[in-house]
Image (cartoon, rainbow, N blue to C red; front, side):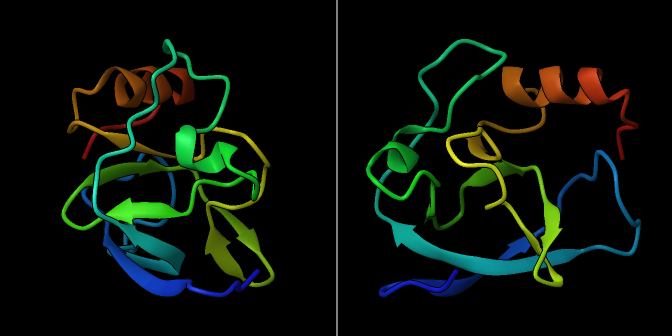
Amino acid sequence: MWHYGAWLITFEVLERLRGADSLTFVVFEGELATRDDFNTGSVPYVSVRSSGQRGSCFAMDYRFGAEYLLLLRVEEGVLSPYWWPLAPLNEQVRGPDDPWVVWVRNRMGARRN
């Protein structure tokens, strides 16, 4: 799914809602953004944040130092947040108490690290 202008971006795992405890970093393609891109919908989100609504159907913009809730799946042998077009799979959040994080955590019955 490589496209012109994409970079490999490394994310530090701050909390795992599910998945291997050994997962401390994830790397996938994306683009660096200069501004925030929070979802303006109501929780639970039913659509991707605005940068994913501009043609590719996936939000691939990430602001350096920002936090994101990533809903990952193995695609072509690697973990990816790009597996369901227009879905809120990689939303920018405002920390562990962000309403989207709380909703997803509760919905999944996830443990908190």
